[in-house]
Amino acid sequence: MNPAMTGGGGALRRFPVGRLVVVAGALGVIAYAAIIPIGYLLRGTFWDGRGLTLEFFRAAYSAGGLGSMVANSLLFSFGATVVAVTLGTLLAFLFARTDVPGKRFLFAASLVPLIIPGILNAVAWIFLASPRIGLINSWFEVLPGSPRFDVFTLPGMMLVEGLHLTPLVLLLMTAAFRAVDPALEEAAIMSGARGPAILRRITIPLVRPALLAAILIMAVGALESFEVPAMIGIPGGVWVFTSRIWRALSGFPADFGLAGAYSISLMGLTLVGLVLYYLMLRRSRRFETVSARGFRPHIMSIGRWRWAGLGFVSAYLFVAAVLPLLILLYLSTQPFYSVPTIDRIADASFTNYGEVLTDGRTLRSLRNSALLGVLAATIVMSVTAVAAWVITRTRLRGRWLIDGLASAPFVVPGLVMGVALLFVYLRSPLPVFGTIWILLIAYVTRYMPYGMRYSIAAMFQVGRDLEEAAHMSGATWWQSFRRIMIPLLVPGLLAGWLYVFLVSIRELSSSILLYTPGNEVLSVVIFSHWDNGEFGNLAALGVLLVIGLTGLVLLAQRLGVQFGARE
Image: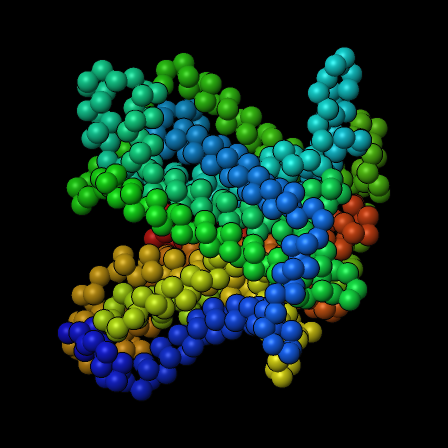
């Protein structure tokens, strides 16, 4: 037996020096990423150089419109979560538990909105549902008494953000529906229960833990959203925490204390949501039914409702994926925006594509984004793989604190993380501010929790037998970890690497605060095109980005199949 797996507090002392260095380095990165930014944020907000102060909070909470800002933030998060969880859960149920036609293709197509960056989704919906220039409103204006859609409202923001978050719920809930033992459902059918009653009283309670997780992740995701509040909310006069933080820092001079006060308030809201989730999760343990016994999920035959289900999925795809992509594609071929007509489509050109592909700033941002994505994904998965080994393979006292530290940035929204790192590196002697490396620190810190989840899940799936046999044969820890553990962990680590890479490429909320001229990334360049009214170039760059990300996902899927990871 490996001595590191059997010891208590003295196990660390029995680690070989090489293993100790690797483990200590990984844990040091996690501790630094989790503690330092939050610590500096608290210090910068409650300390004014002379002593403790609440002046920044007084300034923040004496400003006009505070009540409406808090209410708007909570309502925006609630509405977006309702939209995403409702649509995502229904789609997951149709794909995982019913015989709706063509569900394999429809499932893949339903994940397309996940590839579209949030900034492009917001831009697309502005041109689709603006009250003056929106394509959807132009379709209905010929009808007397037709509805008028206005995306620059709180309900409009909820819908746009909810549609963008729906694919995440779909992924979570599809896995949950497939993992449920159908024995209770089959017993209910034998007892004469009908489909709606089975779904309401049996199926949904069985997936309640996953449903709670989806609700928490969507609520936090909506609270920390930056693109929709900045691009849709501010023009519509709908202020939330993230837009207030952005306004405090985008003025001159930047008000770091005010931004810190709003940031800590927003972080507190996400922390409250996390605590409520764990409290509700404890009550959901009685619904656990998955055991070692093999089973296949029960596929319900829904008769003629199959076509209603197909219509629902098709409508979702048209609204969430087809319309945004079509309006971006149209916009990318026009010198300026006007409502699409046959004549305007006939005059389409690829001039905007030529401009963005020859623009030095765009090419530089592409290199920066690719470099940061690769480095962030590699660092996150390497560090969390070692940390996951410590958590799952040793008996070190307090090892679960490592997981807690790595997960701490989950409650820190992206914009807040940007504020926290500004507090750190504007005062730090380290020459990081003004370089690309501060963006790398932000990405590694933000996505450490997700890398830890992938690494721990992968580690739990690998038995100890091969590792222990290698030790018995005289292999060192590094040899067994590199030649046995890493190959077995490749499917989980590859999935985590791809996820961190994709979200790093799309990240805007931290990048918009931390970049400096010459260190732009793709999301910042797209945002600057929006600020400058260069809609054609923005759309062309966005279309190329979506095509590139789609190709990357397809390539990763092919590689994943070769390594044994089909999904």
